[in-house]
Structure formats: C-alpha cells, structure tokens
Length: 260
Image 1 (cartoon, one colour):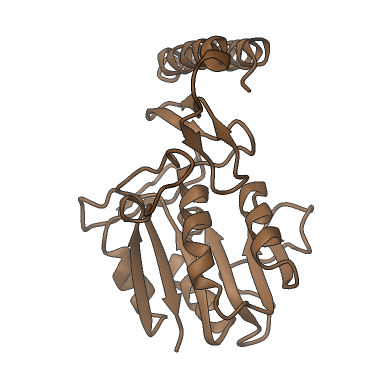
Image 2 (spheres, helix red, strand yellow; image 1 turned 120 degrees about the vertical axis):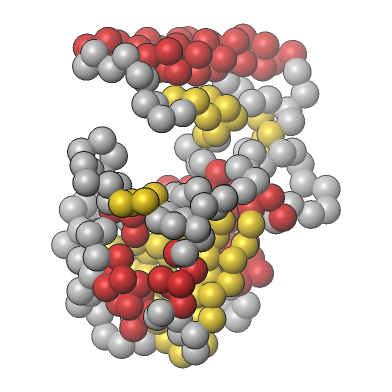
C-alpha cells in the first residue's frame, strides 16, 4: 500500500532539488507527479488494486508518476520494485525466450527489477553482471565497445537502455553478437521515437548521458551484427487475464537479436 508520508517526502525532495538547481523545465512536471502520487496514496486503501507489476508481481492501486525536463510520465514506476515500462515488458517476454533455459547470462548495467525476474525464472543459471563505471557488479570496468569475454561465452545477454550511452554503438552491437553463443540471444531495449526512421544524434550528453535517440533504423544497426532481429511491441504483449494493468508504454520496443 502506498504511504502518504513517504510520497509527500519524495515529492518534497524532488521539488527541493529542482528549486536548488533552478530547473524550471522539470519543476512543474515534478509538482504534478508529486501531487498525483500523494493523492494516490491517500485513496489507495479504499480502492481496488488495478495495476500489476510482472517483475515483482506486486498488485497496487496505482503506479507512481515521475517527471523530468522532457516529460511527465503517468503510472510509470512500480512502488514495489521500481520497475518501469521497459522492465515490465522484458519480464513479460522472458518466459517465452528462456526455452531452453540459458546456462550462462550476461547482464549489463543490472537493475533490481530484472534481477528478481531472472532469479525467479532461471534460478540455476550463472548470471554475470557487468558495467563500465559501477563497482557493485561481477565484472566492473567492462567497455561494451571492446569486451574482455571470449567468443560465444553467453547463452543470453541483457542490454537494457545501454546503447544510447555508448559513443560507438556499432562496435557495441558487434561485441554483443560476438559474445553470444550459437543458438543464444540478446535482448536489447533503447529509447526512441518509433514513428521516425532516422536516429537523432546529440552533441551535448550532459543532461542524461545519451548520445542519441533512436529511430526505426536501429533495426539496420542490429541487423549488421545479428543474423535475425525480432521486434516486439509492448502494446502487443499482454494476453489472457493478468491480475491488473502492467502499465506498458504501448509503442515501446524490445529487440531480440540472434547471431545464428
């Protein structure tokens, strides 16, 4: 159940940071998000839970709203585990992709929502976590543009919102394919505008570390390294009668690359 006190504290922190940083673009969105979350917490105990997170399997009356300089995202974050739309989408597609179960998994920039999904679905798999700058991983300092792993070392590779942070994404994609075993697969998500073909490059990466915002031509980029590229649209994923709405951004994509 959401807590009015915790959501009010969260909103106060958001707004205080925006004021201190004189971030006039984010401030109105943070005020709106904070107000929506406090209101949701106040009425949570009296309403029927209608939102479901496939990462932590938490059912709640609302997902949290968040905001930044670019947008206000409604019902975006699971209050139980912090999962966002992309995490929840991966949680929905992984069961079908993990047959047969992978023996060795490489997880870039690991996040708790996906980690708990792997623990639940493939508890016997060996999961290797890695990141360029974090030290709370199994293999710190690995540059995705030039990995220190052997060819075909992994049955499954997870690369969730990483490529947009990489200067040479073509080199990174080639390395992902190289490290994946024959018959294995790579699950990739990136931010993008899927109504647009071209990828937009940014000269200034100081805001969020993104070098680019992808368009549908990312499929060509992935196709340069993988023999097969499958595109899964999040709006098409939900079937049957789930415990609640999983809060997916319907136009988001998950890309599945198979080297052979």
